[in-house]
Length: 234
Image 1 (cartoon, one colour):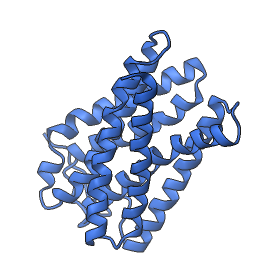
Image 2 (image 1 turned 180 degrees about the horizontal axis):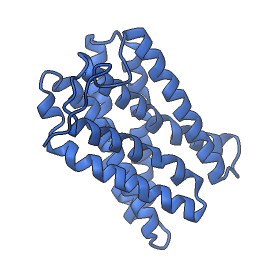
Image 3 (image 1 turned 180 degrees about the vertical axis):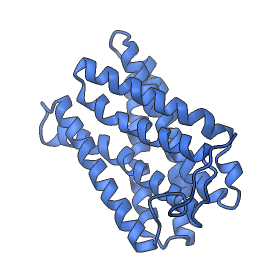
Image 4 (image 1 turned 30 degrees about the horizontal axis):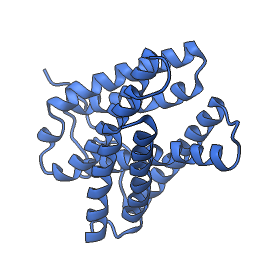
């Protein structure tokens, strides 16, 4: 497989994921179409994460450890958030299984890598890396908190996680594709700063989408009961 072929596969999977995202979002929540589209969407996004590996090793440029770390970081973020969105539904009746050992491992890993990507992006003047660091920082911190807190959870904690993850994945399927389309059809000289602006703009839209879905379906932003005492696990 050549780099160009690997890129076609990667972009093709991303495009399919974009269509499945909107198919699931536009369907009745919990209905057959929503479930089928959602499952297919999550499987495709896991494929997108796996398809990053050929892009790393087949790139026709000198080996760049920093770029490899960034690719691995983004793939880990995509795979983790996709899995969380799925397991939040499957394990909604078993919170212990949902926040098991994988949360205790992946949470600190995402948080640490997010901090590394932020520091490296800041040091190198790369605005894209700095913007994308939010994924590891936000989800890593949330996973660590949820893994160890023993405060009373609000009844729909699982749906809070699901919406957080789905709206986070909104950025994954829209940010890069929109920028690539912009660079191809509008401005072939678009810069890294332009790419960062696209990602930041998509993130703001994702937050607005999360707020709208939360109000519409009565799903709070937090996982615990208001005023619940947080008691760390011994």
